[in-house]
Image 1 (cartoon, rainbow, N blue to C red):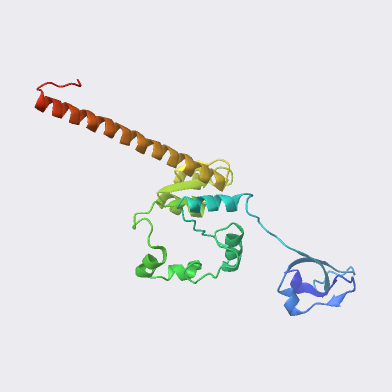
Image 2 (image 1 turned 120 degrees about the vertical axis):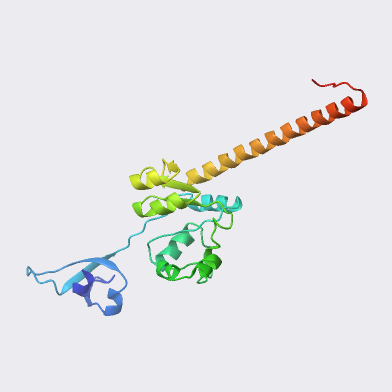
Length: 224
């Protein structure tokens, strides 16, 4: 809005120059006017501001850890497709220089126009295909997805009360690393349960076979 009022700008040389339409379409800026009139025209551009919401430190390593554990990461955002690609590349969901097809990155309007068959082909309907689906979110608009997922994870700091109530797990630190830690401990417990059951079955089956053979051959049970 401010940029549309500017007719000049200061380049690196410090000499005021006229600003053209192409330069106006490429920046967020602030400006001033040298006289005391209240007119909102003829401003001089002073500077350009870049705004960025960086990924958390270690997010890329955590996403790589999930991938190595067989967990696929999908990102859903309200940002435009160009911003989405940049964020996905920065945090490691997309590889630098990766050629992204239309099936891999789509906009909401396009997805809503898909038929059920196209959606099946696109996302393979993860839950219907037997996959376990986990969703993370912090806003009220994330509540339906958090509730529908097998595991809903909301943010404890920035998350809304609606999101927390709709989720199964609240991440107190608002850090994706907590998901990786939870996944690691969950699999550790699952593996221990498997080993315990395997041990118990082996011991019980061996005892049953010994008792059966002894009972048939000697008429007595050695293990009581």
